[in-house]
Image (cartoon, rainbow, N blue to C red; front, side, top):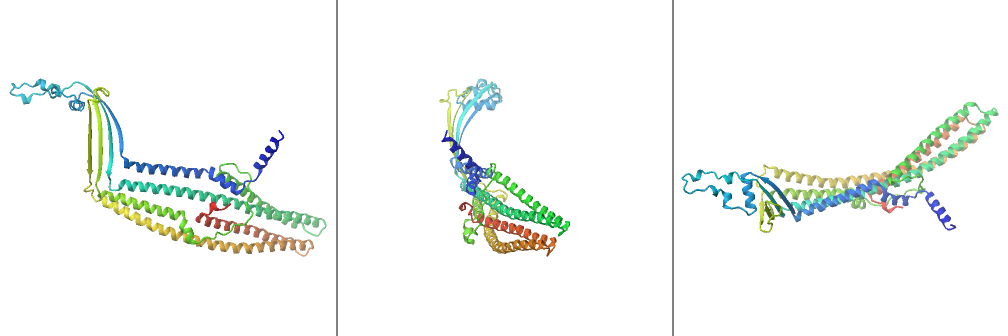
Length: 449
């Protein structure tokens, strides 16, 4: 018992620890429902590829027919297929060579046969020998579609890592801002207490404390909004991780700007890889359409047995058929050439989209890098302004106590301090979003934490 209690307390302490970002990333990879759906899509695309490749091996079908008929043609055919035909089946019972009108006689047994059962069992194997590379082209298309699914899965993971890290860092910014706002709120409480004492002593007016209370209410409103944003972030984190998240260890350090070149990002961009894969798909599609001008050759082999009872005299009644068929579409009203031309246009369009993707991503990278430089400058200036605004507020608070300035002057300086806090929060958030966007383009999500 003396060993169990410390272990139990240790487990409780571990459960009580805030969720760290590295641990959250591990949970994300295991639990996120959207990632599981993307994984299923990849598995389904793999099966589609196997289905396309299976066409090379042809088909083996077992066919069982069970009929009953008194139709003359059917009964006669059944009898021949079962290898049981006799001269009587040809109507020889009514044959009389002495009859001068013998050719006009209608054989009754041939025209009005008795009902007959027909059980036919056969195995049929069909194999495409040549399809003008159509099957190979479709197999290549399925392979590339699987590759796109795997790229989508990878991109989905990058997206979720991006959203998770952004949420963690946003939480850190919110907590820093709340710390500053609570400091303002504490100062407002002290100022309110000082103002009330000055009113009691006749050195201040009642309107002064009303101004303090009004500003205090404004600060509390902003704190409530930020607390609500924290709660929403926890809800979103719970959704991402597919489990309840109550507390996290938000990062305190600032994000470093990734040092990657445009060429490095372009070489590993998932969007560009997807565009290049789509181009290969259109090339394969063009090959498949060009097969319209080529013949198709197929082989078949069939073995069967038939009788008026199921598998009756199966060995004696068996038969086989083997053969090869060539089929060549000589004329299709111009539809074949139109289909090929359309495939050629789609390929050219896809090729242009690859170039467009490269230029678009390069432009986006340069925009992000410029925005990061801009926000870095803004943040440095805002930190200086924030520090100065805090000192100015303290100075004005002291001067108010000495009755050198009005409460309105103090409130104005306090408003500037508050505005600087909110501006710094926005600038830091903008910077983080740009850095995360750059990391996502460079596929750096897995290299952090």
